[in-house]
Amino acid sequence: MQHRLTVCALSVIAVITLVGGLAGSRHALAAPPRPTRPAPVVTVSPVHTPAARPTNSARPTVAATPRPRPSVTAVALTPLALPTPLSLPTLPTLPTLPALPTLPALPTLAATVAPVSDPVAALTACSQGIFGLNLTFTRSGGLTGQMARSLNLPAAMGTAIAANGTAVYGIAADRSIVAVVMGSGDASSTDVAVQVNTASLCTVQMTHSQTWPASADIAQTTLLAAFPGAPQSADYTPTTTTGSYAFSAVTTHPVIGSGTLTSQGVVLAMTKVSSSQALLSALSGTGEYAAELAE
Image (cartoon, rainbow, N blue to C red; front, side):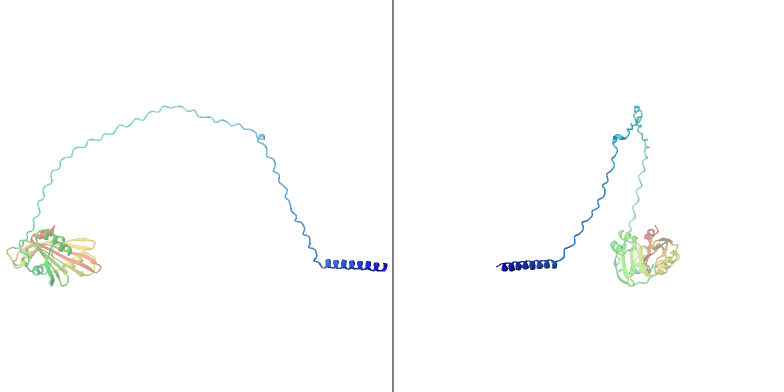
């Protein structure tokens, strides 16, 4: 009996020893413990304690020096005297101007001849009989003041038409323009050419291809060559403006079939159209129209 108790006690001790060994081996196989981190070191700066400021009581008190004030003396103001108003001088009375004389009324150009039944006869008498040009007319008819302006004819033509002058126009094959205004003329003659030579205002205009002349002498020579019937030896007065030359003269003109002379005014002009073209025009006034061109 005692022997069994001894065996049991030894068995229990052996079991406890075995369990303790297994527990130690288990702890030996476990992960090693983590290293302990050192605590951070915090450096604390020393606290700066400002020095105590001196109190205001320590500063000396400086007394302010009073500034001297200037003495002010009251002065009585004298009011300004207003200037005496200026007196304008009395203007002298202007003398009464005498009344202008009444100008005499311009004479009305009478048109005693009958309307031209054949305009070509009058046109030929102007272009060929006065200016020496042989033209063939493709269109002709009566001329009104409005038509004269639309054809850019000289202003004297419109004035003569307004004075009840018989007027015709024609356009030639070379596109020259001829216009004739006939006045009283020779009422006893039925020859249209005689009427044109004794009292008429006629003009011829044509476009000419040429370079612009450099002087008035060259322009006059060109115009006299373009209108060979114009007075070649007359004393022309030149008038030069930008883009134009004009030459005027007063002379006489023979009346066809009568052997007599009638007064004649002539104006030859050249107007620049382009760098290579110029408008040549000739204007003749015979009889009662000569004085108009001489003015």
